[in-house]
Image 1 (cartoon, rainbow, N blue to C red):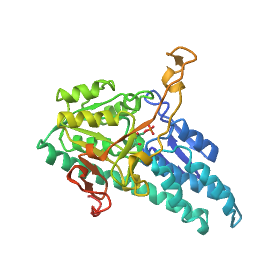
Image 2 (image 1 turned 90 degrees about the vertical axis):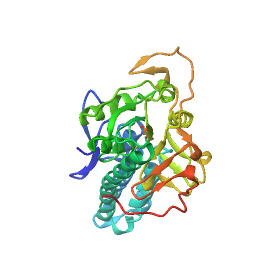
Image 3 (image 1 turned 45 degrees about the vertical axis):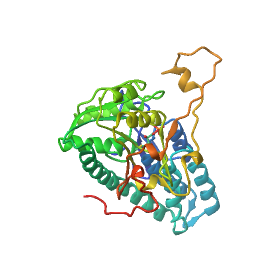
Length: 344
Ligand code: MRU
């Protein structure tokens, strides 16, 4: 099943706020509905947001077409609203902008571009999985590994398969996964709700950890490698991802464990020089002060709630994309590392 797709003139997406209890597909025909779905994390994860941005632009182009005439200024105005629905994952604006390159050709051309982006995402995840699994065996020197991961970077964060969790799935399929240790991922529990659901469905061995146990358990040797996805990779390799990633990277360095960032090339933002230039979404007090409709903190308090943090490139063993492996700790850069073929 695809996390997000186009069917009969509408976007269909799995409503991730209902998982793991209910698997429901939401049909989206209006821009405002899509923006709301993005902001409440019904659809989430950087690559899935890229596809949502592109398919959303197709919806916009259709909505502003009368007969054969497309109202370009109105479509562009709506596209600007969509690209700003969430700020940190570059894929959202990337998907909108790429679909917009076909706007003057009409709504059907915009949709064709969006469907190409969807198909490329599927192929990219397969390729990242294969590259990542090979590199993991090479750098750990082990045929079967224990791995740690945070947030959800699986099929739910892409169209199919996923990025970091896609590598873990590939290791599992190749008989190279001993056990996975996903972190629950406060405050919205993407790890507990979504990654645990995906690992269970694939039949992979895993045990769930609370976030604060991750760094300590790395120091006790629980995992041979850490895998994270990315929302934006700056030109120098600094990587924004779910908050908690940075502390895992520090702990991985301390434990001498490789720390892998797995993301498609569409997450690389060469226009952003370093992590300091990445806008980090703050999701406000409510998500921290309560859960599932129940208040857990006293009324009247406020919270700081960054949805993401930035891992400096010095702490990253390798950035694995569908086309290459870049090793910042060996002095390799995104600007200079050549592209290879898609695998297989
Ligand atoms: O707030 P979310 O759930 O959209 O955050 C998602 C993440 O941080 C993922 O790790 C990232 O987008 C990569 S998904 C392949």
